[in-house]
Image (cartoon, rainbow, N blue to C red):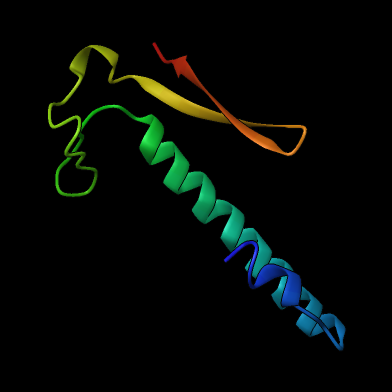
Length: 83
């Protein structure tokens, strides 16, 4: 969607411009969510987050947040341990 539809967005007025920006934001958030799900190497609260390749829950590393950074236009994920 990002490569196919986002470049074709256009606005004829401020209202349509707002909608275009909302679509771009939705695409970015969807991409972040999908990639964060792939980074999480466990199953948690099935069926909400179930991975066939990692079918077990990882309680040792449960209190981790996935943090995203945009470095030069590239998404990079790190883990932050919460107390």
